Amino acid sequence: MTKANNFQRIRELNYLQQAVLAAALIERMLPNYGLFSEATGFGDEAVLRSALNLCWEKILLPKSKISLEKQIEKIEPNVPELADFDMFGTYPAIDAATALLGLMHGLIAKDEQEFISISKISQATVARFIEYQLTVTGELADNTAVREHPLMQYEIEVLGELIDFVEQMGRVTAENVKALKLHAIADGQTNIGISL
Image (cartoon, rainbow, N blue to C red; front, side, top):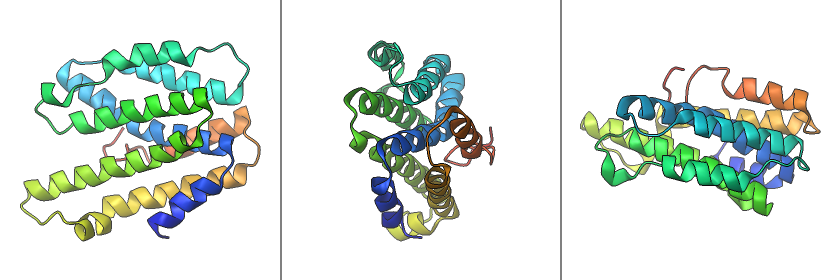
């Protein structure tokens, strides 16, 4: 299954399906932020975790009084600045926070484009990680090497499976969402292959 095909399939999902798919992808990205935070002492993963939980709730109960604007204000100071840290883990941490902010902006503005972007951010995190690994080992980190890398193949496969799951679950209910969340983290690793 090609990458373009996955993005096309996401575009064909309805608004709620796109929202839960985006949230499921962030479930796989968020632990990268936690690892960065542990390593550097910067940021509070709990703030991001709580905001993601509220996003799930908002998707299920669109009329609830949850203020995502307030959550955005809490998250922004927790986004690391690339210039402040000399370690690779800064990138996946920024990507996780950016994806979460995108999800919230998408839910506030009812903008599906934001949800579609999240799968691209997740893939970009994986691509950057592969490039970093290849460079460290002195291998060529061109597009083909990145695309054919097992980690990227796996990311594309997981995205495809999550899309299948969302397509098949029909209506977005609390039960379905719970199953989707479990499915997203069933392999016990983040999107860049770090064990949880």
